[in-house]
Image (tube, rainbow, N blue to C red; front, side):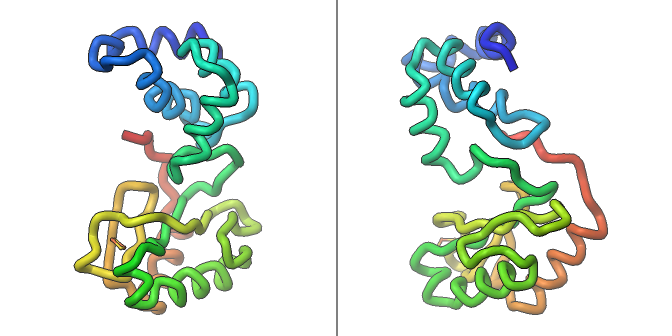
Length: 166
Ligand code: FES
């Protein structure tokens, strides 16, 4: 992804943002695109397209848990670890999914590259704790361990194209 391509994507929406630096998020989402994560070159190109420093762009990219600086699986399962979910067993849910997918307790991608498990902050569904979210689109809860297994089985059986971040 080049800075020119990123600028071409940003130009039609530029007027929607009061400050130039606010364009960094749509630029990062666009650069992440179909491959699903950012490379160091992408960060550099986003910086060039938005007149920001690569360090600033990387600090923004690393803050958001839907912007990936490393490759992720075809599907991403985010387990909420904020207060309501934690009090209702999300730590056990996360540990169960990580163990099942063979990744560290902090998350990671299964050996077959199908599923990434990650922690997430509040998903906005605290009344349904503990919650998880699939591909930043489908939020569900309360989720039992067996339901989490069923979700992972379904995702592995029905892979879909990587969703475009909104
Ligand atoms: S605390 Fe988990 S959805 Fe809000």
